[in-house]
Image 1 (cartoon, one colour):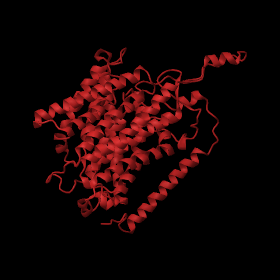
Image 2 (cartoon, rainbow, N blue to C red):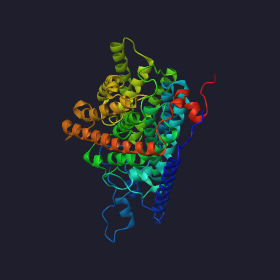
Image 3 (tube, rainbow, N blue to C red):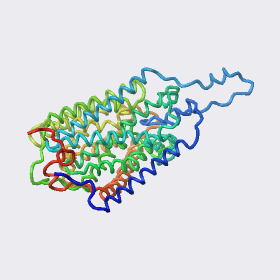
Image 4 (cartoon, helix red, strand yellow):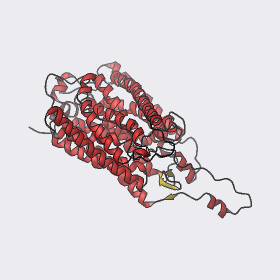
Length: 493
């Protein structure tokens, strides 16, 4: 069956207007980026402009040294302000971590999601994951990196680095160690994968019945007005939550709660699948899902340990915590299923692994191994309820449990980060650290994330609905999106 992209002249006109607006905006970005001829910035200034994206404390300030007397020799001035050091080991680790995050998306997330849908929709999910990721990576270079990490406003950055203006082979990004930096291109690439995977996570909530064009339009709007401000608030110097001291080492709020809230609202807007609640909508290939979850676990070491930005003991701590929390979550989910359902399932173990990974993400660099085990266990047990009892309470057809695992797991991890980061419980925060105060800050971060992404998602879905419509026709849904939307079939009869 063939479907038309636009139904009626009004939709065509709206689409043309939207395309024109997007073209004007992009042209404006480009014009602003190249309106001035930038003078080559010193390495220290470039490092300050690229604040590390995953820090719990303000990174070492990079500023000009106190001017030496006019008679002082140039050598004395250079000694007072030595050039940052770029370690080849750090660069190699960060490039490897970036590749591991890509592994999380394709094939990891694609297989994880693809196995959980019915066979007639598996290609549509694979395509949505890969295409949304690719779209957001391109937008990251156009304006995303600049709005997230350039400038020190409380809510959003600026366009000083649109189209990577001023990012060169010589420009540097700061790390968490004074005098140690990374090539800025490495930091740009690493953070691009974070933006891409967050958008790809969302599509699982309304899989099997959504229009492909609507997914792409929503992703652009959500990325521009949702992800970028939140990333700046949490990870950039001057950002509102960054300055409040919110702890989010690798993306509990920016990635997982963000994706969970957007996905849940998408499930409401798109509506329930045909037959939901009346017939079994079973995964077509649990083996795919299990392999996908295994690849996610492997790739997540780049996601979490890579967020340390250096190959040192901090990366080792995040690595160990990622290992332990995931193992604890698998055991917790399997045990909970055994008690409540009588059997532990492969799908449950795969989901438990992801729940543990989500839970430890904000905490992996600041809690100790004991805290990681507790957080993983809590995420594994609580997320079983998230994909069963909570899902029924919410009344949404969240197809692949994006909110039940990523949203709820992210909330659990973000709050418990404030508890187990304390040195008294094995964490790295010692002098002056107050658990109650930090938990309050963590809760503030969770609340802001839910409200901000909620508002942006509602508006974005309304726009996508007005332009393309959100849902395929019922006949197309019954036949399957692989054939009706993409003209292909995963399994030939």
